[in-house]
Image (tube, rainbow, N blue to C red; front, side, top):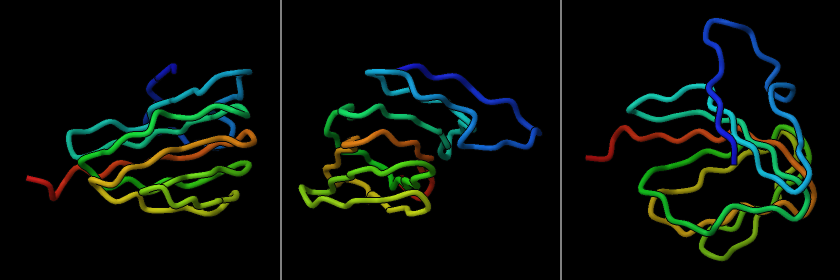
Length: 112
């Protein structure tokens, strides 16, 4: 998974700043701060992130295609324009049954 930081103070067309790459998941960082970060990601069909549990709340918003996001084993099918909060300390898996792009926002503040 590749991670590149995005230029600041520049208007972005989010869906265009990351490409699809066959058999890959790509990640591009837009903002990275101690209180959280925002990344845009692309998933090719059949790709997924390893099931995990995060200590922070995460908001996933689909900007192209369709994603499957499992939270505590419950499947949520999201299409372009939809988003979901993945609560802190909950098991989650993000899977591409077809290719998609998303914005992932992690909020770290409020957890001491």
